[in-house]
Length: 150
Image (cartoon, rainbow, N blue to C red; front, top):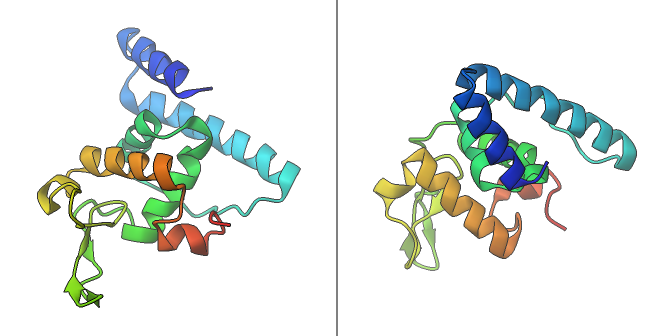
């Protein structure tokens, strides 16, 4: 299911009276099925112990391509442990301390959202999706550890 179809599905399900929890559970069960069949067909690494907050599943599904939702959830788990208030990387890089913030642990380089914006889960996921679109999984250490970066 592509991103537009997923958005349309979620919108229709909400208008039909389905609760967010049942929609998220449906999406998660379909992702597990798709991931399992994908992994068995191409021997892709699978991190089975990802249990993200349900709100983050719908946020990630809103911004990332459908085929990358599970990978994005694994990266969140590896980067912040699913903590939207996580602050990390408080050490100098090239003489500057540029902490990383939020779910995807995005660093505060110039021309990026502010720390306050990056602590907002929706803004963090939206910016992470933009980074992913431009650079793939390269910006994230967790993605390298998961084998998502060539």
